[in-house]
Length: 196
Image (cartoon, rainbow, N blue to C red; front, side, top):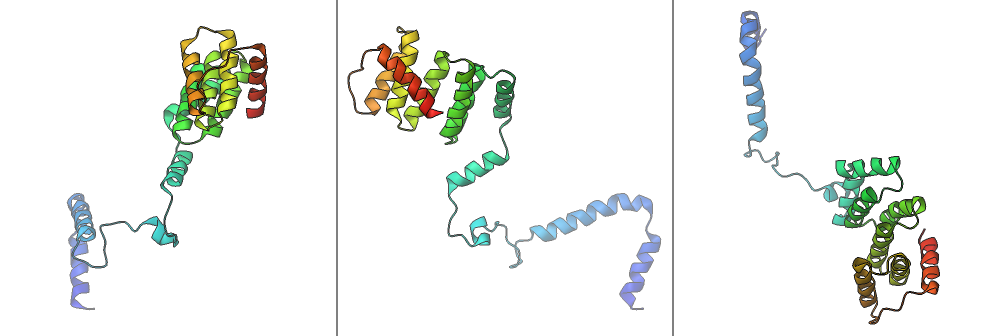
């Protein structure tokens, strides 16, 4: 046997259980200190970018964000989804969820959520307004205006609906709001059916 092997055997024999409580933390500190030593050229304190690992020139940040949100849903968003499963006509849960989906650049999912509410409660003014806002966001102004008009037919004095209709007209380059008529209400129902 070589001399260093004999020294290790002696250390093992003299090793006591009380010493193990101090030995393991010291060993862990030494190992971690060796990993943290920046003098070694083989070790890097910076993580290799994923794009280099895969061989891709660059990764789209928006896609990375979508993937991250798809894998880990926000607890608040999950709570809103659960509330909608219990009560499909719950506009109080659907509107914040649609807002969150729109912020994540998922307008088609936001429309699906709002369609669920509108199927359960077809005349809900807040859901009609929210869906029209999402449609405006998608530059589908004609469909959005039809929904605003449908909601205004039920509540002509609603300032929020009037302002949103005027904004939709401005976004589309039109200046004067058209009057709410039975024809525009029919157009609203057709726009609702088309957007489903």
